[in-house]
Length: 460
Image (cartoon, rainbow, N blue to C red; front, side):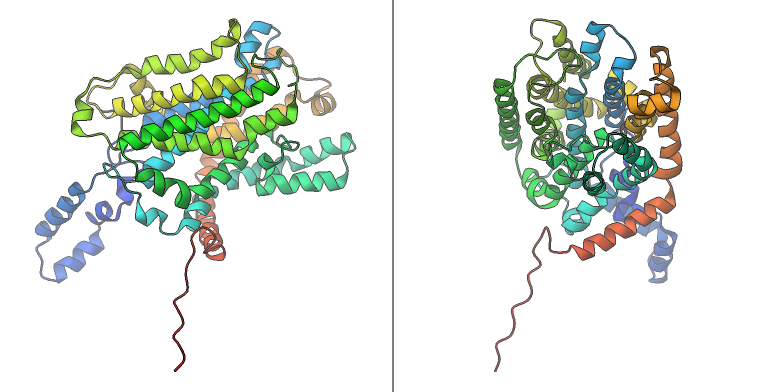
């Protein structure tokens, strides 16, 4: 049995396709019957049109991969409160490597949803209003960011008052946080809820998608895609080497501060490098979407080996090849993880997918993958409550002991489940987000695509 869910895909849901949806629409069937056409004949014709159009099944196994990325990131940010073993900490504290996988998956899904299967074309209907495309993507994550920022804002401001931070600086940081601009400011990239720099970089990448990236990448053949992926990887590595030549090629001591913190922030946070990795994900999924029948018949590598290889790159910290996070991310982890996604995708389309594909496509991994985004947003503020010295000392007398760390992880999981079920999936929240997307798209029309006014008629 295939590891993909036929006919379902969230944004890729075939039931939302106008052709597929109309097949069983009672109102439309009644209208057609009134025109004198036989209902059974209408069903046959509509189903024939639906079959002629390639459908995109939901790739549940890719959803499951999100959890494999977010869980070690959640652990990494507060790992020093879980153990004193320096060797274990060297392996666990590599969140700056793993986050590259999230940008790749974001591009992978965006490319899958917004380009055509088997054709070198973008989905014109999805990209016809680029401003709406952009705002819809932002509103997929901004409501939760706004909620968590507002709930924990008193704590963030309180901490700044403890350090006698000027009110003007606090106001500026609040502005950067709520406008998702912090990734552009290396000195302020980790303000308030530190992991949300990711959303800041992702927002810039999303604004380039509907006009500059997706339509252009969609036009490429497999040869062009291969060359583009090589070019993107080379540019990404070049930047990492540039940083390492200025700083150091090998990783620093566990918990030690980087030699050049602002340069390090520009390397790991800057939105342009996030765009590189997101585009790699688009290139990767396009390669799979252009597979021919002959391509599908060729024997594929088991995705397990690429998964093991990508995560094994984290183990280099324990060897003489203990390169810094930037080098590991650009040279090894991101390319290997991207290849793993394409292998997993192809394997999921076969009649007998491998064990790892079935595992990541299982219902439990899909549900855990659905918690990845809430976990990413919530774990920082929750961790500050228990482990940030200025807060924990006043609330609990001291930072929580190491034995508490599993409890912290359970609190993050439970809180993420509650937020996911009662806020992210809430129909009211989704409706407000949809209306806001439409409103903002109208207000910014022409921002991403020039709507030329008709030439004025010459006066007689």
